[in-house]
Length: 200
Image (cartoon, rainbow, N blue to C red):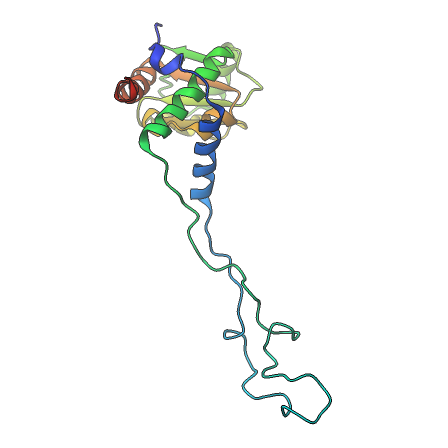
């Protein structure tokens, strides 16, 4: 199959791959970590002892940070870790990842993957016939296919994503890519447009 050079023969830019993977992983973080400050912990409503005359250091509350059971200073608070990258940068990163896999000889294209039944064993046989057994494989389909998705999901090291959801992190964390022809066409249509937009 003839591949679009603007998508599969783009320069591999490591800094773009790093930036996009970092963005994807940051977006997955829940950000629910939290600690209690001195206003949130219980107790401490009264001054422990009088200000002067005891010979001890002055204290205003037993919930101050220096006390056991006191509040935490500058602790983590719930927040979102997401950050944005320009669409053109994200597209360029995906082109870089696909180009790298092609240069490594890790990209396989088949006419179609029509199982017609829920059969994990059949999916395993197909991967073995394509010399992909034992490797981590990302299967890229052109659209929803319940037979394919459910037959592949129990195989260790095998993931499936639709062409519109193709992303840098999944491409890089799998050693091999298995596309259908229709999926390649969709990916090229999506990324080649972005390539023309950034062309001088």
